[in-house]
Image (tube, rainbow, N blue to C red; front, side, top):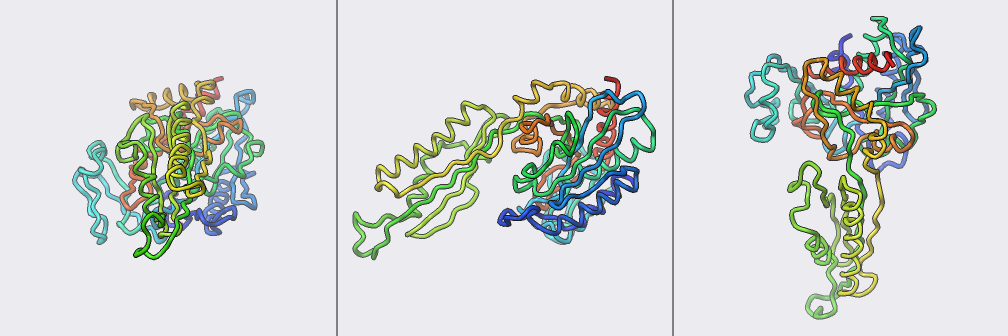
Length: 406
């Protein structure tokens, strides 16, 4: 089975996680893919492949003779798909020799268009896997799962020299919980890579610093006819809170290393209202100022409307893994060298989000991120390039070869 065949089998499996579920995994349906991956690993010769009771998959390929002293290297991908859009009933469509034009996605009325996705011009002449417009595709991160298994199969079959190779597949990455129950000790690697990125020539080692902020607003509701100087409309206070944030610092207005405040969800009425934000910045000092800004706004509202009107809770989520990776920069150097070996131009881009590696790096497993050839993730326009998936397999093998040489 090649990487595309594996991928097509994986994306048809419904594995969406659920952020409202307190369980691990958050959805029972993730077990089906975990068990399939264990079966496939065993079929290719990963004899100790297993799935634990929490849906984490671990497997190991012993070092070949003469490479026992090479560092143990790991590769990790996640099995769940994002709850942002439906992941049930995925019907992948293959477009061979893509002609560069806009692509109608089934009968959904949606169009994969150049005006929205300028990178499509770079994929002309290649083969794409797209959705039918009703669901996301699941390239994030089933492409990574397929690429790791395909690389492991080729590694074992070829007999190429290598140190110990560690394989891990995790649940619930899309809801920020994948590292919660991951056992670095059981995984067994000294260094690792997540295979969960975009273009195959990218290596990512800088993530956001991340936090969430929840504003809980207590209003005072009286009859509107006699409300002067008495009523406090929680919804209007919520609007005022958002208006106090710096202009032009939202996801729509920022790129690269620019941080942002993102209002993810809001709910309420006159009596009660709640705002749910995420806060992101690559720079530690700017990140601290952003969190302080939320506290300052809460104090300002309480000074205006009365103590207790606004309560804000700011919770850290993950840190920028670059401070760990820069101490282990051979991970980036070997990955970019493996990409160059394929005749590609390697790029190191800041991640405008997080990966498993953001937390794993601080758990003692330095872990930059590799590209999978997947674009426009988390929605119906998600698409994967077959040639880039195949190249990702070669990048993984190239990295393994470089560490085998010491």
